[in-house]
Length: 260
Image (cartoon, rainbow, N blue to C red; front, side, top):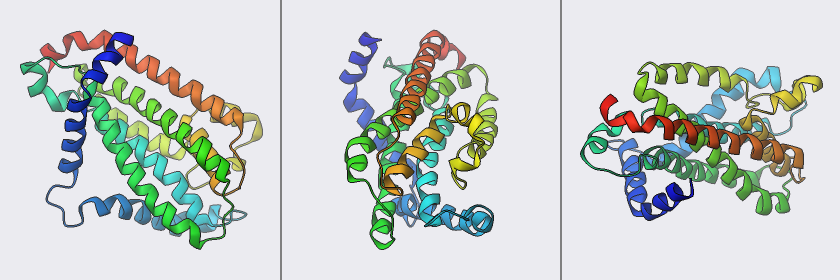
């Protein structure tokens, strides 16, 4: 694995090229371009606010901010996994012609979505000063970067897994889309963690998105540093997913050129 990481580091300029390509391709021909990074989460927030506001907003202050904090990490994950499932198949021409580390394709997809995630956070950063929320500066400065890193590793592991299986099972991207719909409702985006019965919470928080969203809300809305148990669960599940994704990808990549 260390050898592969060294190879990826040596290919950093190539990774940068693919990230830039993905960013340009996403909004090529659109009028608003990167502004969709800001508008999409706001539109999603508005829709959820209208639909679920009456049912789930009781007892939750600043429900729109509550929604936005859930939407942004989810969009980062869902886009990384959905687009990651096509990362190898979509680059079949390059893979057949030249040798380059195949891991860079799902990595470039995740990094491109990370940039969109960071851009979308500007929306949250612009809104927070105008609403009365409690922010833990220590949590923001110390733990936000850690959560960024862990969720990126989790997304990369998931993208490695889905991209490898999609080469051999062309129906797999459709399965991924269906699973994402279920996963969406299993993540506390428009409802609070407190709505989950306490006896099930430990199992529920094995969902890294649930742990990450809850941790974000703790230091952005509740004014306290995230619970260490949340960060511990997020670290374990993220690293486990990365290890499994990397293992599956390494086992299957030998046949990529023939299958695609």
